[in-house]
Amino acid sequence: MDEIILAGLLVLVLTSLGSIFAVFFKNLPEWGLDFGLAFSGGVMLVASFTSLILPATETGSIWSVIFGIVLGFGLIFTIEKFVPHEEYFLKFKTSTIEKEKLRGIFLVVSAIVIHNIPEGMAVGVSMANDVEKGWATALAIGIQDIPEGFAVSLPLIFLTERAWIPVLIGVLSGFSEFVFTVLGGFTFSIFSAFLPFGLSVAGGAMIYVTVKEVFPQVYQNKNETLITTGFLLGLLIMLYLDTTLG
Image (cartoon, rainbow, N blue to C red; front, side, top):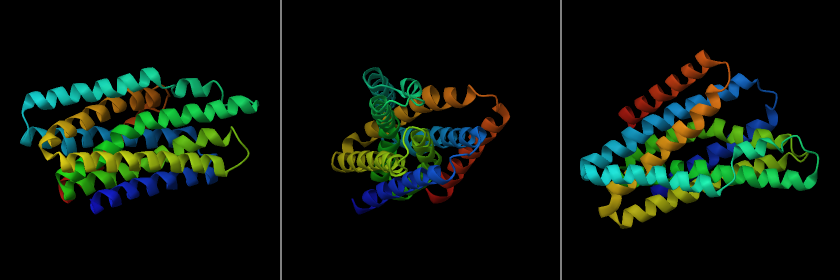
């Protein structure tokens, strides 16, 4: 259990670090953020298979894995239907009305939950399955949490003159991921018979977020070569970490 908590703290710290960077590097060109998000997509896609779905097939039936992946998709899909998303937030980011500023912050926090459920679950469940492989997953997701924390806090800088608010929101995003790391790891450490199912649910949720959220956001811009390079780099680094550490 101590290892799971430490892994959760790692992703919390690295997400918070990205939020702090946003305050000092708010003039970062758009391609830098796109590259970081594409990198995140590569990491998440590989981690979905090497750290979650493939280990699930080794210890559980293929049908339970398939059902888990479908449930993971359905879980995030359902959350998206009931929780406001980034597209709504963008409508308010240039508003000078305090009420709409607060609403914008609420929408951002809601969007964070959508992304951090599968990432936190992935780390926690992976740790419950195999500590070494779990650390590879935690490290890789923690690395990609730096640009994610940056992406969370950067829009908020233009909503408020108080620099501590964007950083606080970024820290809270990391904390939500910590919570799901501990919750996922603790649950499937106790109910180990359901571990293959938990791995596949986390894997399906991660794939959904990557394909539905990350890729469409970055590829709507014109830096396609750079974005593809970032994706490839994230993919290769996660594959290397999973192979060497796991």
